[in-house]
Image (cartoon, rainbow, N blue to C red; front, side):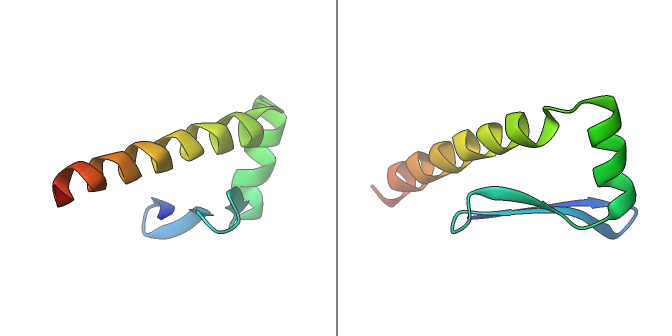
Length: 64
């Protein structure tokens, strides 16, 4: 499971189910998030873990 966040055709963040963490891909975005919301990465990582589980459940339903 992979989430890639893009802005104006530039990759800003990356999340995958193997690492289960967000990897910022642009220094400017990482700095802006850190300055405006120090808990952003932790909160969004947990949110994406939830999306991962929901996606997994939905795929199980589709397979049935």
